[in-house]
Length: 344
Ligand code: NAD
Ligand code: 89V
Image 1 (cartoon, rainbow, N blue to C red):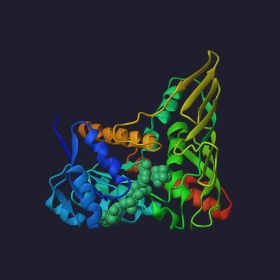
Image 2: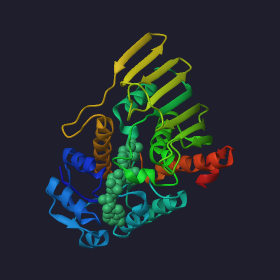
Image 3: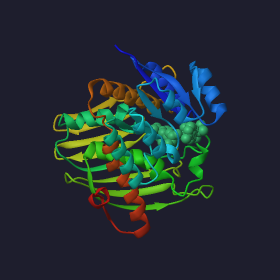
């Protein structure tokens, strides 16, 4: 198998997972890294034995010698770096949140389309083992036609210690975490026609909202609720599990805490343990997310080889990103927001 050579930009908190996962993806590897912070560049370069190191992404693209770029920086730099990749006709992966605004995200998709390069958003949550198990059960017709759903992420985990920037933005939970939950809702129940949202900030030490409740009208007819909170102190901390409830015409699915999948229908009730694997480099409780990082990167390598569109392509992610924008708009106005109008 021909080796796919990658370059990674942004050697921060989360990129370490991506570097480990690239080591595990057969036939792919990182040959160059870039970070504007020399200290982070040295730490990741030494840890993963990468000799080609850059503090300037433009210089790295000018030198070339890689088949794709993995952009693992925070959102402020995403548009410029994706456009740089398009300029050099290098296929690109971009971390979530895809962009600062929906209009930036549309411009990034257009730039990659014009350059003829694949673009994937690193929207990894739908690749988690338990989420895949729910999707598989639905596809197998286990509960018939789903008409109602709930996608819930409620936690009191201190995300700010690893990612201090999360406490500083005007926007927090919908943009950072809800974006994953909204993507899961789309992945499971299909695209969304309109939504209504309510938000609040409970933690006085952060700037943005840390609680959101969002009501979605799906195009296929189902109604769902996406509820996310980092202000919920439970007896057993569920971070980072997304819990799912689905009611269908022939049964129900419940994905509950502890990676327990319960499916009930005319044949009875089955309970399955859908725990993620603990990869050799992973650590609890992050192993669920870490395994999905490996899964999405493997998917990218497969799509690069066969020329197919990645599941979370830039074009697909516009539909998730529109939900984020709509949720903030609805929370501010108190009114429902039409998603089709945002995507025009
Ligand atoms: P971080 O701040 O720890 O790391 C970002 C790194 O990028 C820093 O080292 C910074 O110096 C570097 N950087 C920024 N702009 C640059 C530029 N123009 N050129 C070169 N280097 C640049 O951030 P993080 O916590 O690692 O988050 C990175 C991204 O990953 C964010 O968008 C975040 O939302 C996302 N994230 C995703 C998941 C997931 O499960 N998908 C989990 C955590 C974080
Ligand atoms: O996935 C993420 O983007 C992370 C976390 C799970 C902590 O919200 O920021």
